[in-house]
Length: 504
Image (cartoon, rainbow, N blue to C red; front, side):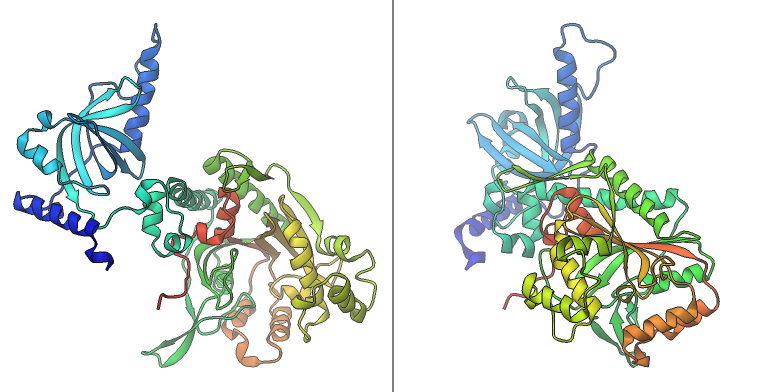
């Protein structure tokens, strides 16, 4: 059994040895005064400054001889006989420790022997640079802070088993520094999104995740039951309708970052639980929101990634795709479809469009028998157009049947004032000129509901009847945005704990 193998048993014996010496690593406390990676960087800066034959100005960084208190996990151990070298790592990075038993003293040296890889310790010591130029700490004292009873994954050379990586993400974060960096940058991305909208005068809010009627999108919801109220609720599939209620209430600029839930398939681009940003601006329109999306993504790229040219690399580290966020194309939905399906696509009969899609474009598996004409065209766009839109593209003027919550375009009443921002071959963000006519909105939602009155969100429609200002709105899939910006090809690599089928 895994919990009785020799490695685990040896670690349990080491824990018993610590306890026998009056040391309980789970009861100790320690207050570091710096972080490992930061100290390493600062000491390296000082060493570079010190190498100059004629140093200029004041010293930079932390100098040799400075005392530090650090805490972290032991991730490497090199036994050099009379000296021991360890790597200590925290969230900021690693630093090398130099340990000499004669410096620690006899009792502490015996306790040191009972430490294992992946244990947590706190240390106090002085900084120095080795002959090889490695920033290091000469350890003068240490405190065990946590015992790892299981050996670390892959001897810290990386965790390659995909199943383990997703099910036990903590092991992935321990073993794979690039993965850890992805999630630290994801956190930074969320911080910058909030900062961007706050600086533009938006108010951040939270709206219900459990809703009596799921609205704002066409998707299969998850159901739950509220015992106290004695009725069914649904996990929300979109943030939209509650945020628009706030426009009615006079909050002119509003945004929310929250979880949505859709009881649908899993793929490298879909997870049933995902993070969305939605933002609404009174007196804006779809053009206003295009500028917002472009400015936001440019800002995040420069601030978090440091460039507008985003490189995606394969397993060998070779660049196979570069996304240039300095150029944003605008193209109409119908024009893009015609590029793939023929210039006369919207001229021929609906029957001919279906025949072409199934026979000529080989989409028989993507077009159900009951598809309406606009759904046939939508399948052509989704399967043949969208995957080709690697560079930033605003696809505008979508068919009105696809977006019942947007305003009809005055120049083409078969379309709505909508854009889909497509990057990296997938939709990143839709944006609308929002429908604020309660009569037109009711008609559109009734059409979408197929005449089923119980599917209408009457409370939302009543809110519109109280008057909503003209507005623009956007929704940005945070997970897909992170995939694009951080060079990841699977949504599971930007979600800390993706949904997986439970182990039997």
